[in-house]
Length: 374
Image (tube, helix red, strand yellow):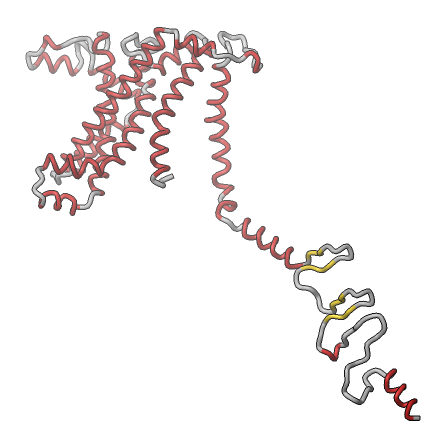
């Protein structure tokens, strides 16, 4: 009987009565829930877990099945992307960006394509890449009229910009001295800039009139009749007369830019220079002018772009043919394209003019990029 009770105690689970270890089934160990462990050993030696895994589960092939947390992460990323300022601002900047890209840069690209053809007259060219060449550029670079126009454009660009900057700086320094009627003088100097090239050209065509023009009449009144001349008909004074009129129109802009730069300089810099015994000229040369470098750069770029756009002024004053003395690339381009129907040749001149504009603007943009302003 005692041996029978021992056998029954061994085969009955949880009834050992002696507080020993639980019975182990045949083929492997399988911890019970009473042991406090959530994993169980399978008959094949693997492990089975009752509680759900956190991020992935093992598949029968050994891979991992991604569960809900990854989906939540993707949803959060998508929500963060849609709520970003860049995505939310797309309806405001994308339409004008596409319109500008099509009508401005698309037109420039199309102009470049035309310049590579032999398009002239009313016969459309062959837009085949194998037919494209640089013949129009070779023709332009071998044309003396092109070089004359390029020289006049460069002279207009340099002289107009330099004199405008110097005159504008002088006006800004004078107005910055706290003179009376400062706002009145500032408005008077800036007012010509608000006029269009058409109005300015008509005004100065009357001013330069050899008989009734204000300039010759004034010279005669002061007994300087020997200085009177046909300002816009004489080849030796034609381009100078154009540059003077443009300086009159845009020097006020340079004055405003320099005046803003002067007002941004701290008063302590003036006082420190005077305490050190610097004269007025040395103070401006050593202390003030170096701090106006940014104003000079921005004003120079704008003025040079205005100089390249002087076509309106010359066309109103002289028409298609201003003559070799005042011919610039813009008027030559218009004359070749719309006067002689040499579309490809006019497009090549326009591309050269565009390259000059890029040469003016690119250094300014690069300097602004280096300063972190872009």
